[in-house]
Image 1: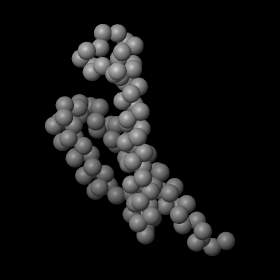
Image 2 (image 1 turned 90 degrees about the vertical axis):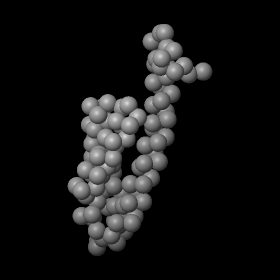
Image 3 (image 1 turned 90 degrees about the horizontal axis):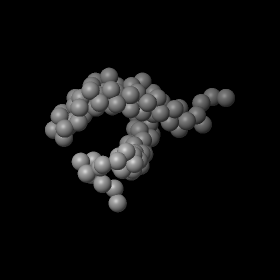
Amino acid sequence: MIKPAKDCNTMAEVREGVDALDRELVALIVRRQAYMEAAARIKTDRDAVYDSVRIEDVVTKVKAEALKQGLSIDIAEPVWREMIKQSIAYEFKAWDKLRAHSLPR
């Protein structure tokens, strides 16, 4: 059984908790990735993949939620900015792959 962080007394217990959380985070990011795939499918214009207004909207919402839940902004903001950056790169690849069959040869 995974102990809450406040009840951990050894590094082994801490690592067990971190490893369990990492597995949960991977599952959540897989779900987020599926939305990037949906966005790539739905967007008809490749230029719409990068949306600076949406990026700032997401970061603003994440920072508000981080404050609400007690997550340091110093962790939340750079983590989400990098996740957004990588998600956009993934979406560009997905967008291109979905439309590769329609390119002239």
